[in-house]
Length: 102
Image 1: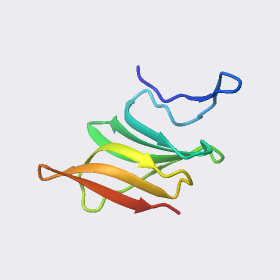
Image 2: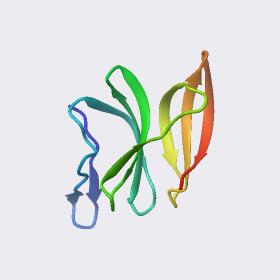
Image 3: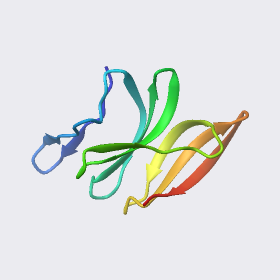
């Protein structure tokens, strides 16, 4: 089963990500900010493809809604973790959504 791992390269040890990896979800694309505090991912879960944002300090996972609806394929976070770029398919066309995060 595929899962998301964050590794501290200085110590070569994995950093815990409680609540991120679920047995019923398959990660498709992952991006992190420069500090590794925020991780954005596209994952396939229960027959749907969704975008979620994980915050390590809170160990919280938040769904990011796409407006209008579409099928996400890839994500990229800026270094500060404030802007999320999402590649989305809508009606057979690929579009890029830029989402400002709180």
